[in-house]
Structure formats: structure tokens, C-alpha cells
Length: 495
Image (cartoon, rainbow, N blue to C red):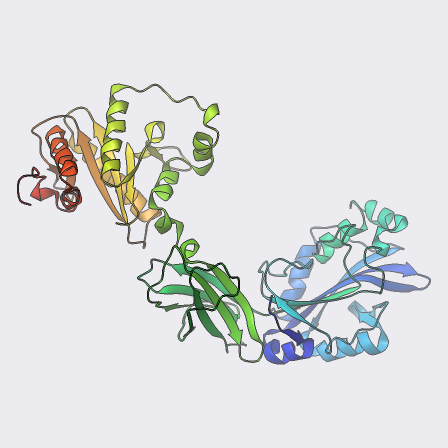
């Protein structure tokens, strides 16, 4: 929430160019010869009047009409140019005008332009968004003194009127037709006015500490004068510790326009960004209103999951999250198959990969990479092994026999699927590797159909790898993965 209150007139002067229609919903009860408003919601929208009316008409088709002798729920759309007239009708006449000159009598007469409130972001209001977007919003509610929690909508005869129309009670009908969230504990207010500010921070991403911070924005074309300020705070135990940097984001590129809503992206480079200890705060600032949106998070949580934890993202593509939870959190309820010779070989290869600083997962019965809809097998992988620091993922196949060309091609295809579906644009290097227990074979596979060479580690090569481990030459393995045609030489030979 913004720390500074704004009057409604001040807000409209700043962003009123984005408003086109006034969406009015009201619930009234019969009192003598008058209809008295007991809950009304006014939303300002960026739609034109025809679009707003069509939206309300489409919504009304989904629910039973409520127009009984004791209870009415009506809707009305006015052009935003009527806003001064609406304010005058509310304050001077105590009437909330609905369709065809019909109006509900108000139990109070607030001065709307003079009222003030704070701009909030997030789902804090009982008023639902008209366009399913949670925009920063100034929401101002007015209630009859002492009536909160004792709404006429919980009265027995009013509830009966709604109940016979198929609603649970009057509040249920109000929720449906007025698109609010009210309950007997929080029955809403006499009058609530919602003023969205059609500007938002849609995304903040940190690809890696040495790359620019990417920021996505959306705003209404009628109110283009926005500034973005990026603040960096180091590790601290103080909630309001000073920032170590506070920089403006100077340029944006428009990427898409939907109606009057513009989407744009910009980036800013921050030196010495520490993903483990730093946090970012992005502020969206209007020159007259100040901050209307604040987005803050630790840098690590702003890194996309496919880059923040490479191995986890790849594993979940084979073993979905729910099943992974079963295997780890509810392991007592799982019955793994007994190890065969081939499974033991895979397990021992994973030990070897672990000793080279990789984080391996033996996929076991989850080795098949299936199409999500048809369950057709697209490829299979025995082990996933990742190095977060090196931004490297190995897709590993294991066989006790002499490897066949189709073994290498299977791993190539698995790499291609992961590269396109999971790690596109991330910079993660995916390498297929084939382990086997034969001796004297080739150290890579290359076919006429592929330009790359798939590294092959046989029994001889594994002996060399153990020597490299014992002599502290772990990098020799990674050099071999990058250039398998050079071969994996023994530890006592130059490379």
C-alpha cells in the first residue's frame, strides 16, 4: 500500500484520461414507497460504454434476476463524463441513479471528490475486478454509522426473497450479481467506489547476476507518464535498512497492445548483484501521485526456476511434482522395485558424477519421457546430473552392452526436448553422455544425420576418470564433455 493518501479528485486529475465508463451495481430493499440502497459498488473502467454494457449483460445471463417486491439488485452503466453529475446526485440529492431515471435512495450523502484513501495493490478489497486484473486501486467505502456487521441483507424476509430465486441468501445474490465477496461477518458497505490505476509491474526477472534485470510493465495508453525506479538492498536484519543503490529505468520497448493497455519491457544492469543475499525493490511512480505500485523480492526468487535450480526443473519434466512429493515426503507409502544389475550400474555411475561435483538423480522407473496427452514415449534417460555453478545439465544413458547408434540418438532427442520445452533462452548447456561397461570402444558417437558428437564413457574411460579424481584433475572430465573428439586421456598424459 502506498504510504500517502490521495483525494479522489486528485486521483482523477492524474489518471482520469484512462476512464471511459462507470459500472454501477446496487442492492436495494423496499421501505414504504421507496427503494433504499443497502449495498452499492461503483467501478470506474477503461472500457467504452457499449463494451461495459455488453459485459454486464453477458454476466447477468449467468444468474437469476432479482427484482422482487422486497429486494432488487440492479446494474447501470454511465459514461465517465457523467462523473460530476453522479457526484452531485449522491451528495445533493441522496440518490443513486439507475436505468430509465429510476434511483435508489441513499442512507447517507458522501462528498465523493473530497474523500481520500490509499492506493493498494493485491486482493485486499471485497470488490472483484471487472477485467480479472488486480490493478493498483484506491477503494473508498462509506457506511451508515454503526451499521457495519448489521446489514439489512441478513434480515429474514430479504433472505427468503433471494432464496426462492435459487440463491442461498441475499448476500449470495449480491456476490453473484454485484461481483463482490461479502459474508455475514463482512456484509459489505452502503457504498463502495473503486478507482483502478491502470498501470502495473507485470514481471521482474533476473536471468543471472551478470545479466540485466528484466522488468515488464503495463499501462493505459491515455496515461503514459510513468517512471520506474529499481532499488537494491544487501543482506540485513533491519526492515527499513537503506538501499545501496537506487537507479531509474530509462527506456522501455512496447511489446504488445490490447485495446488501450500497452505492454512494455525494459532492462537495467546492476553491478555486483548477489543472488543469495541481495533483494530488489521495483517502484512504479506517477509524477503527480508518486508510487502506485511496489514490487519487492529477494534476487534469488526472481531468477526463473529453470535457471535457479536446473536439476529440479529437469527432474519434474520426467517425474511430475505430485509424484516427486510422494517419493520424498511420503516415501513410507512407496514400494520401489528391487535393483537389477543394470540398475546397480546406473547407481554407481551416479556416484561417479557426484564426485565430480554434479548433482545426479537416477530416474529409475521414471526414465521414460512421455508425451503429456498420449503417454507415448518420446525418449528415455537413465540419469539427470546438473551443475548449477556451470549452468550444465547432463542427460545420461547407461548400458552394460556395447552401445548402439540408437542409444546416442535417443539421448540427442531427449536433449532437444528439454532444450525447447524447459530451458529455451536460459543459457543452460545440455550435454548427452553415454556410459557403458564395455572396453576398447569409441569415445564419442557421430552419425551422418547429426553434427554433434555424443561423449561415450566406457570401462577404460571410467578408470581414467577415477585417476583424475584422485589427482585433483576434475576439470579434465568437463573438457572431455565439451570436446569428446579429443578423447579422455589418462591422468599422467597432457591434455
